[in-house]
Amino acid sequence: MDNKPLTTVNLSVKNLKRNPFRTAGLIFLVSLFAFTLFGGTVLSKSLENGMNNLSKRMGADILAVPYGYEADIQSALLRGEPSTFYFDAGITEKVKGVEGVKDVSPQLYIATLNAGCCAYPLQLIGFEPKTDFIIQPWLTNSLDHLLGDGEIVVGNSINAEAGQKLKFFDRTFLVVARLDKTGMGFDTSVFMNLSTANQVARDSERLKAHPVAENENLISSVMIKIENGYDVKDVANNILQAYAKESVHVVVTKNMLSDISGNLRGLTAYIYILAGVLWVLAVSVLLVVFSVTLNGRKREFGIFRTLGAPRNKLVKLILCESSLISLFGTVAGIVAAALVVFPFSTYIASLVGLPYLQPSYATVFVVAAMSFLLSFLAGPLASAYFAIKIGGFEIYTVMRENE
Amino acid sequence: MNILELKDISKIYGSVKALQNINLQVSQGEWLAIMGPSGSGKSTMINIIGCMDKPSNGSVILDGANISKESAKSLTNVRRDKIGLIFQQFHMINYLTALENVMVAQYYHSMPDEKEALQALERVGLGDRAKHLPSQLSGGEQQRVCIARALINYPKLILADEPTGNLDETNEGIVLDIFKQLHKEGITIIVVTHDPEVAEEAQRTVVLEHGRVARIVPNKE
Ligand SMILES: Nc1ncnc2c1ncn2[C@@H]1O[C@H](COP(=O)(O)OP(=O)(O)O)[C@@H](O)[C@H]1O
Ligand SMILES: [Mg+2]
View 1: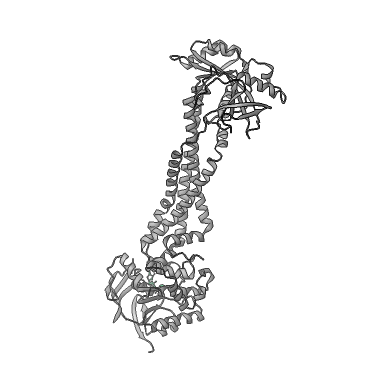
View 2: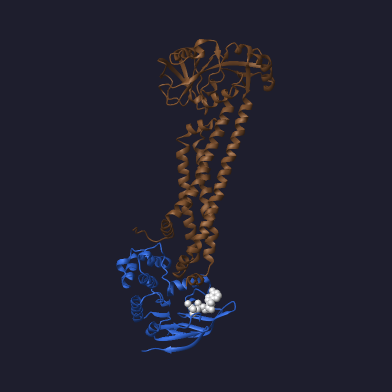
């Protein structure tokens, strides 16, 4: 038995302990809300952040891909999903000739492989260092030389620093740079020049036939930047008109991004609606539980009053009890959310399939504080009415009740 | 000297006249019994004296002060400082141990003092039950804890509303012995009872009928 002096807080704790199941249930309910609000907000902020970052640094206005692979390029870009679609490398020069096109740069996706370095599959992306405007924006320090044969740039999730060596299919590659965190498929990709990519494809033949090994003149997509003053839709149409017959299709990145933003807004709205529903649920269940237990506890409060407890002490006792429930629930919910959202952010990102960048610690802290406040309020708010009611009843009616 | 004086007290609940023109004086150290049929107003009278209810008319003078016009808040203070209440039901807080039940009265009065609380339990013969919860105590033991709790802040006046109503003979005897002891120490006791044996121990018995004092019977000396 504990020898703590009796105080309002101790009395509350003792009473909460006396009903462990009810107490645990209420705490769980509050924690569910705190979990959803905090976890959900961090999630949606991370997605928003990833999205903003992507639109800021996305160098291409249009992506040209083989007909039928418009969706695949999105999953390749955003999620780094294995992609094997190819068309003739000559498309690059052809597209460059279309009216309104300013810059073009080809990319070649070699299907993902399990490399020795990493637990997850990697996407190998061949690109042309001379014309590239896609990789560069994600490099904090630009390369001092064009990427040579056997040199690679790695995505942020790959555990290798510049100067280190990585091995794919028994061939060793020199890491010359690492990208900033992109929150998308690039994070688990390895970049190399086109001839190195072809080499890797040939090396991989030992395990499995690869189309790129057979034909050196293949690429997967062409990144396109348009001239100032041209409308992206018109340029995309020009490309289609000229080369649709050669199975070239286009994806307008602005549309792709706004689609994602739309999904994101939907997801954010869903999270907040869910949190709202849970909050209302938590408050109403607390309200019901407090009102039900209130009647059972009238005798208890009557005894306290006969012993000389002033009304305000009883009000305090109730508020203290509900605050303790709120406090434990809120802390449990936020800690649980933090334990899910932060360690598993990579997994969540791949699950959602959208760019995912964790906001700054300051933002996370503000979100935590707001979640705490809202969640903590649930208890005292739900019990306030009953606290006041308890303070107001007449003792003699209570003491008489079970006569 | 009178510790309590009821002057022309009436209490009306809607159309029910629970008490009508009650006049009564209780002197310091007196042991008074109140008897009467059910519904005659005994509890109403205890509630008014115990500052849990206010009379509709008349005045209550307790320990020299007229409390009938006091606010609810100061009535709480009067009750806390001067009165110890014992009821027919064993009104223990069921999530607190016997000791804590006594200490909670200290807490709302001034400061919990574990040693003193333990002594109070020893006094009612429950020193070895201090750490027991109400569910681990018999009815008689619970009532004795309630008495220890009522005494802990040295009240001038003990009000007991049928304190032995739910007890067997053995426990009734124990409670009566405690009351006798208190009486010897000079504490004023007002006890409502149906039991002539209990009333016999008091110095006077007030008999209520239909909210009025029917008669006052002096007992054996
Ligand atoms: N709060 C109340 N509201 C209405 N009537 C009451 C209330 N309290 C007591 N009464 C009535 O007053 C009368 C006296 O009650 P009470 O003092 O409890 O009697 P006793 O304790 O002698 O049995 C009864 O008729 C009872 O119904
Ligand atoms: Mg009664």
